[in-house]
Length: 189
Image 1: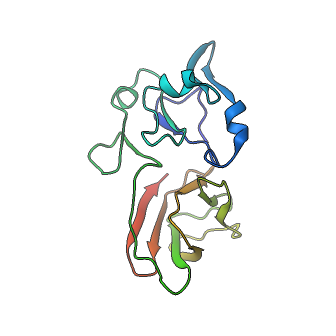
Image 2: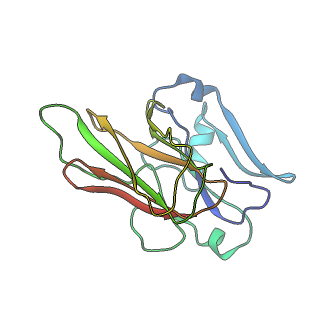
């Protein structure tokens, strides 16, 4: 979660369950800072879908939000590589993994930190349905300990990782298929 009043960053708003939940067709979302409107999203009309500066190219409802006059806000871009420190990896970046032909494909989620925290929260979503594929039960993360958990998928699935990190500790996490294919690897603080 970001505080829009103090942020000077480039962010991305991603509606969870957009493809399956009809309620999104009735949502008008106004993102404001102080007294000015930064972004107006009207999901029930073509107006909102066509007037987004950086909308999700596959129509999943996401949009970039640049805030402030910082260098980062002006150089914000959507992408799937690591070509810029201001690039946001979004819901349209694709990772292909080998499908388990006998049953579900297992995805391993690994997280570790360099400092103790008892506040970090991790939820991994199926972005289309809004269902949580993983919701951490650990309330504490010790430094240097690698926590490994798994979830399974049985079809092509758009996955989103939501991390609440109020202590702002450094967290390293990855998603890896049961065959060792790296889906996502990231460090945040």
